[in-house]
Image 1 (cartoon, rainbow, N blue to C red):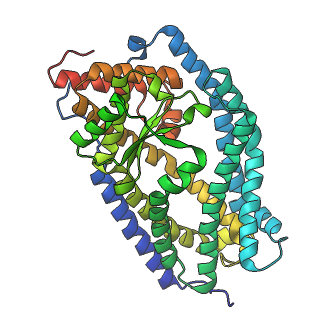
Image 2 (image 1 turned 180 degrees about the horizontal axis):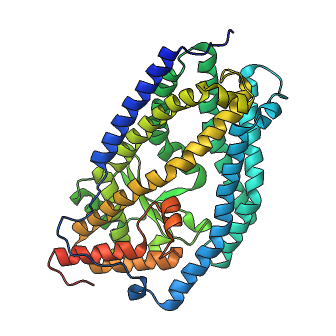
Image 3 (image 1 turned 30 degrees about the vertical axis):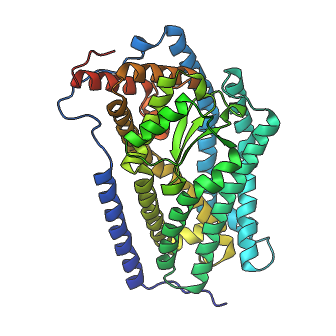
Length: 425
């Protein structure tokens, strides 16, 4: 097969305009679908204060735990950046991948597998380090065998998805000069398919699910969902206790596959607190957060395909990576390095949007249950059980916080109560 030639300046401008248009559409959807204000204007302001709701020993325990697990977490982030920098900024990846033999497509797949496994091996001691802290604080219930099995499963899923993306890019680059066009379309479609397939294909790999036993709690959850106007097919219980003592629940799937999923660990909490956790998750379904998030993710993936094309069209980038074009199987390292950098750099923006969406779901739970006191009790239980960081520093909040802090969520609930003429719990 003849490799595609480098595009003309006019073609590059077309890709640039396409990126600008897709980026503008993505930003517009984000701007209009993100709830930038969780409560109505004029709502009383309550200042978050961990000391108001948590004992000094609980605050100290959370700070100690966060300090311990932050070290392997930051080291893992640093490792990601170093590996990505080597793959993008040096020819080492291309030289190593150049040793592979066989058809181009086999070399691409072997390259993705080899690099993924190599990075996983480098991260393995950091994962074990973090796991020892989780066990020391009673959060993990896993054996090393089950922990290893989960890591291998996660590696298999992530490697499979990466292989599909990288193989598609190289194949299109070998066939089309303006490969970014089918790549952008394919990235958008793949994101949508992955989102719809996740509840029925990926989730069962990591957890077993059983229908919640008939009883008052199940009836109350289904009744609440019906009252909220959110069709739910079933209420399932995930066997999370074989992995963790953390508490959680979520609403998964679309349409006929939508179901309420409750961690079996959460069932130890009072029923009204379980209902509030589920009410929060119903808020996501009511607002169509998964659908809008999937659409935004698909558009962002399409933007990524255009950006990848423009970045790798620069001769300096290819020369540093030691490859003539993305049509060369040795380009696997460059592509994976750029994907890693894009993931890290886009994280803070994703977290910012996520925090506002989570705050809206909290407000939805309060509007649905009209019970700020139980909401606050539930947030305290979650924070203590999950050993949540009550006062993350600015960098950690920017980089990792996909939810408001527990004190922020409690303060919002008190503001909600005052806004509705109720005493602040």
